[in-house]
Length: 577
Image (cartoon, rainbow, N blue to C red; front, side, top):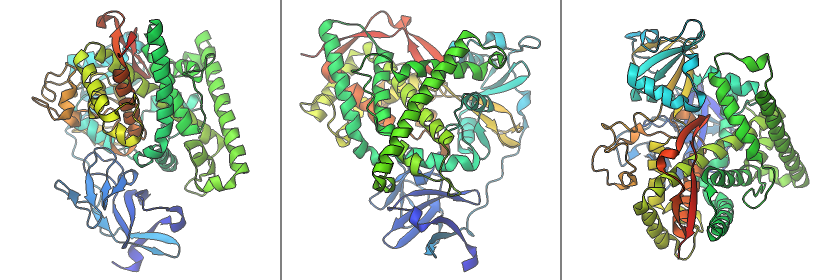
């Protein structure tokens, strides 16, 4: 080790608090931590599933991964409670900068040798010119892909006109691809094109140097360590939903479950991300989610469309999409204008932003330049649509499952009575964190009904994956449900059994087969917020009401439209005596 082997990783004044800080240099991720004895630097990706450790937290002298809570001793990087150790690098401060000696960093692992080309896998033959285009009903796309997986094997291909798409349910391949983002695999080019064409160029589809600073802000806004401060917003919105449902129960009304859950998630998102109280739960009239419900299915349809007709002919549905996107942008532009006025009136807020929109407004990119309005608006759209859809649909599917499981309604009620005492809604984040049965119901729901039933990636370079040679530009869809409902990985795999998440698996229970928030460096930054939202709502629902679905379970269908939602789900609530 010598002075020349140290490289600069950050300005000291950029790093407030103890961290951890997610940094990168020379294509190497680093987790940097401030300790009483000085700076400590470790390899930046968790050895378990590749999550960025700099997005975790510090607890009792341990670096904790935000994904599956693996803990590493800050003294030497050793894993606490299991085998393994993080590589540690000397770090110090010089001339107002933190520098790290990376001379001892292990070279990047060489990709495994390919046994055969990915182009050799089987798949449906399709028609001349069109390929399988006429077989792809976008509202059932995930079901079609899963059906083809059973017919053609764990990895297969299909063609839409001249575009070949590869699909896999192979768990090792999925884990390898997710860990290799964003350098080797990136967001699928079809998804990126559809989003970019709609004017969405935020953290969801950003790549390369543009991705990291945007990711940093999104993670900071939604980090688990901030949930205690954010929780009053969740409490406020959940309390309103409780009152609304109480009124509906008293009147004997039928509730559209998806609509109800979207009111909740939009209100939480706008409060936490924008500092704006939309209050769609109480306020009638036009609501922003009405526009979102036009935007997301249209983008999904364009991603898988065999021909981009909208670029040449504007049909009525395309004009509705344009109007919806314009309405969303106008709404967010007003949020941005109000934020800038607020910061101008109170400049001290710039040093301690209280929400995501304030943080993006005052932040700078890696070159020290402020983010453009276009980048800010794209990330606000991303935050809005990501916070609205997936959590609302998972909550809706959980209600669907609970309607057929009075035992688990009773278990959530028993837990809520014990944890929440006389309250219907958890009063703080600590109480919400003790709702283990509600957490198990959410986990089991996501195992059976993943809101994101597949992820798409495109190879950024020529590479290998699972023994296949993968050419640059190849798009791979990764099916997320088949492994989770594989009888070799989950006992009684098609049954709704939340007890498997409470230490009572009674058979196989492979948690590695379950990744509803993705994995690796680009794991969903809203994971912690989504989980606490789900615990709170499910506990409140079962503590205050009994749930009865209107109609048979068979009448509720899975519908794909960017994410997977229940179609035809309505319930009646009976207030608990």
